[in-house]
Length: 504
Image 1 (cartoon, rainbow, N blue to C red):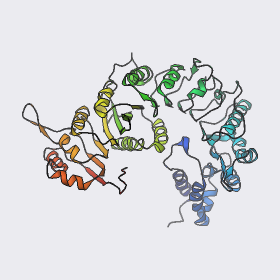
Image 2: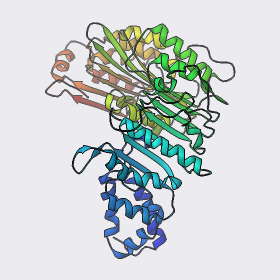
Image 3: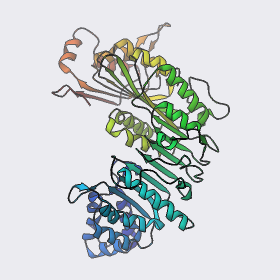
Image 4: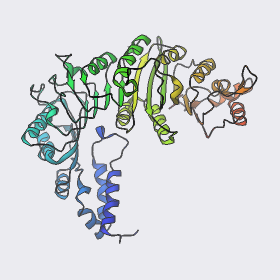
């Protein structure tokens, strides 16, 4: 290991590394610095004297003080001198004694935050309901005392009820006082927020509200909210609440990104179509110039669709649809879309994935919902919303175990540009016939989804597949025929069932 690099080169290397230690797969809105971040970063200062001198002499390396140790917090703040800070705090549990945070303990934990707001660029706080009110009051008070706070990004997350502090904010508490704020995330907020709490935020460009809309609209649902520079918006709430909230926004132009997550309301196809026409054709860039006709063609976009099929008393389809603007065949974008499509089928990761999509640099849209339909009924509903020609990634989880080959045949006809297909709880032989080349009306062979390059089949019962291969077209024969006619796969992944029968 070369320890004799110039100090300025070492500082650049350390700065890159100090960013990497905070990458945990979560977007900025959800990342809280913890002991792992501290330990992974501090180790570089223990290699040798030169490395330690280089690190201690570079103030930007210490701009993320971890609020897990009073001593280390003090050290980071001292070493960062006057560099802009990125602060995050988990104000719920005393990690040392595993007890709820009391008002006294909260004061000691939050003191470094409030005392350094004057140079904080990004702030993420995860806490109970009461302390959130205290933080907002402090933020408002300091923004009025100073000409301008440097705060650009703010994320406030309520993770559980209770705690001490204010239940309702004073009507004069408004975030427009933080003039430089460009990104804002509010999650599970339960305070009685003033109706104009977000009004006239002149610099705000990115806004995400998770289970917070009803609180913002409490008592005055038709209040106008002026956000002239807003360009990216994500809402998690039922579709009716989302529609009503978007109607109150006064913007200077169309939004580049709209994400609407509704994962618990059981919708009718008519409700979904009405919502999409109301939101995407009037507020999104795809509707600029006079609105759009349904189904939306999404020219210049690539899309991913994930579907979970289930059945209890009735058949249900839970879907997630995301489209991103792309001028070229961008493999990295395809991969990101595919990974997000898979992750969204797992409830625990949905919020993180959606907030990641919100902060991407390209135009896009996202919507989700639950419909009481079979897949054969769901696809006709989808094509009344969007042309499915844009879909390049498809993920289907069939917990109902009733998707037939004819269903896949119909799906593939609607998605000629499909490049990546992943399925779970579906046997390979169900895909063999729908994917196989067939002779068209003019006598020439046609290939379903000719651009398909990646195929993943999860939870495969190989014993059942072996029995079927003796009586019908096998997947191997199907893929061989596709390859012979110029449509080979680049990647095939077959994942066997676990002993419990659960797949991905």
